[in-house]
Length: 169
Image (tube, rainbow, N blue to C red):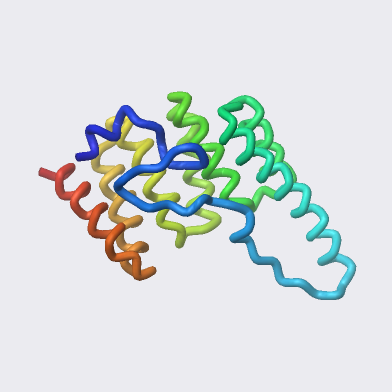
């Protein structure tokens, strides 16, 4: 089942897959604690800049402007190195350009920053699979499946379970 997806685009801002229903990875998911202290306001200003570049990257990717989207995601990361969604979307862009080795550390960073996002593990698994690192891909898919189950997304978890079984036969 996964073989037919190997030649397709990776999950991310411009592609979807029938295996997993993926919400857009976006900056709106970022929650910042807001206090009236001046240092917090400074952080919010910095994050606003990162979010603006992140949103620009999403928009440019949707318009198929890969170079512009890549530059915007890189700028968002430069402003806010903890913006996991920017790393994941940059990784997806790179993977879609067959820059798999460059995509890997971006997914690893996204996972390190937000280890409870199943879509990050799934996208990372796709890259590993495309690199013919089947056992590593299966492990990443299993982590995605387990998180989906934990989050009550049973249908997506079951779809991913079928993929995992087909890979391990």
